[in-house]
Image (cartoon, rainbow, N blue to C red; front, side, top):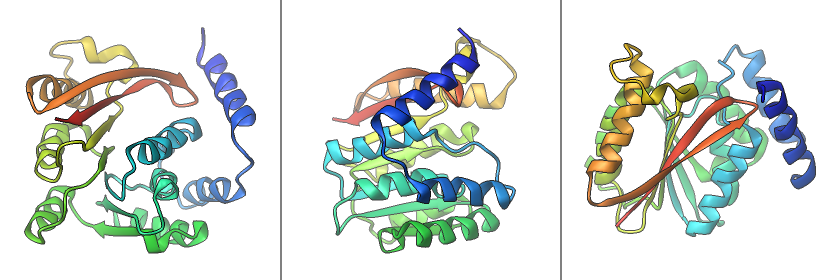
Length: 221
């Protein structure tokens, strides 16, 4: 099967299961118009994140890697009225676009966007005595996956759901010593989750509009 078929099936999923959403369409257009890389989650993946928030009954969500805020909006929509997403973004331009998108989507009151290196922002959250998060979504620079997962454990509690994106890398995750920093980051995520007895996890391979990739999903025991 080809990526063209995967995309057609993704389109079928969206047309069959989702209502038309001009706001999210406008968010993606704004991202394109502002020159952001087209690496947002797909609509089907965004809906999965929203459902995970609802299934978990999450009130506090942490996102590492905002980009233009597309995935942030999906998760914010899954929160109750008093819920909050803390989302971390390195690039000030991306953050500016994201803020505009949050206003467009009417979720600004549910989002705390912090700009700067994520590892610094995570340390700041800890210094502030942030309450544990219910769900943590990691979708940033892949070589730092183990560092982000280390912080995720510090900012979680029993029952916290941890989701790490882009861990299959077109199947390259099985290659040892690939020389690709992103592949090594994906492998490091597997090693971390598999090696930490506090985590019970699995991974889901995905195909669709975003190609062949997948999520690692774990729960803190």
